[in-house]
Length: 476
Image (cartoon, rainbow, N blue to C red; front, side):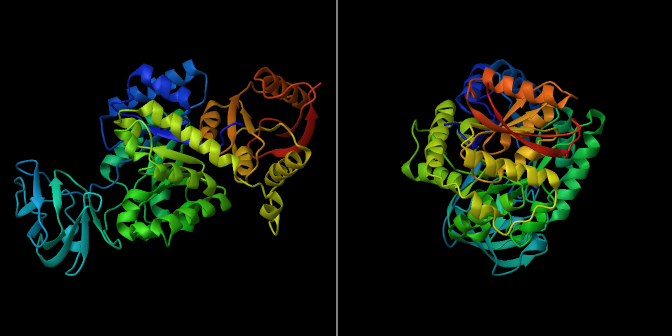
């Protein structure tokens, strides 16, 4: 059984060695995430080239995702690097402070905090481990009382319970980082903390302008991290190519208990709107230091797969963990086992559905036909990858192969659930293209004599959005 769910892994000190990276790709990584919160532009460009070279050596399409840092909503630095806050202590967050912090106060990277909060608000620091209650806002100083204490160190993040921080999604650094990402033609750009469709539209415009000299247009991923994004979810989805269920910051703002239901809702909505979805944050957190996952982590990954996510993501587990390759291997096995339990209900999927486009109708027809005929494969000859994307929005245990002559489309399809992208030569003759598609899958051992398959293409060939033909073939 082919694994349908894709794996996104974050590159970092633990995986920047070419040998380790090769093991990572062979273990099952489909998308490599470059975290722009760390490193200089040249570091990202060099790592991107390393990924591309390694993918060629391994012989598999691997997409590159540039993950923008977003606004730095953080405290400043401390004279001793950290302080221990105790419940009941007063503590001041001072936007005007330039010297290093101490037990009583600390400066802010986020200078707008005094305008965003009022007495009674709750602030959560260091991923929600420290809780402060706002007592008084005085000019640039936010006076708080420690409700839940703990160790607070340099540059830890700040969240406001319930949301409401006005920081823009795109900073000046993000705008420069988009240019860097387009220099190596990142396949996906992930935007941190978008609050509205406008944030995503602006990011897309910047990326398209930066990529114009390369004739490159990346796919845009909205990271759902703010409570304000939830009421705007459908609009954000429509303005994006996909979303990331970024459960860390989101959980801090909306509360841990609300996240599982939101995750299911986001995955369902993304699939209904023909968008991709990545589930992220702490999926295999214990494997940063342990060689096996916890039972709870196994269930978490499996449930995301059963929800229908396109991909599950690893962050520190592969960037800085002790067992990056083993983590990917475990995740791949969990996904496979979860997929075995999935029920195919295409009839229910298509009930009361209307397809206004010929290419979408052909894609749906291929799924239905392949399922009921027991085909060994579904082949989509596609320029942009859209036909394969539409097919992948519906659960089917028949593997989908996206065959394209464009390397950018091949890499982009690496994120799509149950889609295996393959690069093939460009043809203007339909019959030659169909014959080559069959030959490629026979060569790879997917098809053998007597096997049936469903194949879609457009006629005339080579026009994006032109899929208008479905054929059932049998290998002679």
